[in-house]
Length: 330
Ligand code: KG4
Ligand code: ZN
Image (cartoon, rainbow, N blue to C red; front, top):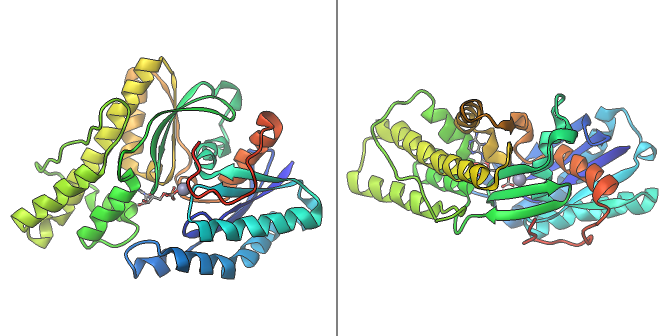
């Protein structure tokens, strides 16, 4: 079953063709990062306009790269939420058009579910041994601990009370004058940096996260101490360490409490090397299975949307309404 995925929820215009939920035939991502970097963050109106300009070309590229024609497609997958309304509507309109003209099903996908299914795109992945799994979904908009019982069956254990972890990376990077997006640049300047500087790992009780406190701690420290520019890598490294510590502590607690042996990471922040390496070490010491998407599939892409649609179409058989749902939950 060949599914074309379409993703336009934020600042990436993406289309991809995936076969049977596992084999990537093409994966095209057009990033608007340069456009938004000038403004220090995503400008919704600009994002929507650039999706309109890019979407047709990106869809054609995805087909061309896969060596396919429209007639070879069996279904269309599209992100219906959460995301920016004006951005989501562009992908949805494109998907509805393809579905209507070709008379093939259009499967609406939750963006967060898509992130989860990026894990299904690794060659060694086995869907048979995946469930039950604990998922840590960490992106620009979400920090969620989710117990996944089977395809489409999710129980949210904890979420962010304020800023998401990726959002905190972005805001701290902007404050430190490091640019946008913050995650990759904080990771880069922190690499190999040793420091005694310490920020407290944020704790919102139970399985919930809070990152606005950590962001404020960094900002207050800088305002009080007025450090020299050479100290910025140390500040970035101390922030990264505290941010990751909170993710690791909560996740390990959830695995213990719920007696789950499979852990899966998902979302843009899952590309972070320190986060990946910390969980890799923990999985060996504590003897649980760790699933990590390839780094390039952690950030927004359409292959993950097509993969999620395959499993939803085949196994869940319950479909999301084909309408823009900016605040959609799992
Ligand atoms: O999943 P994603 O591409 O978009 C959303 O659904 O939000 O995640 C984007 C977020 C941004 O906040 C970005 O700073 C963060 O993921 N990110 C990272 C890294 N790469 C991207 N955070 C930490 N380390 C990274 N290497
Ligand atoms: Zn995302």
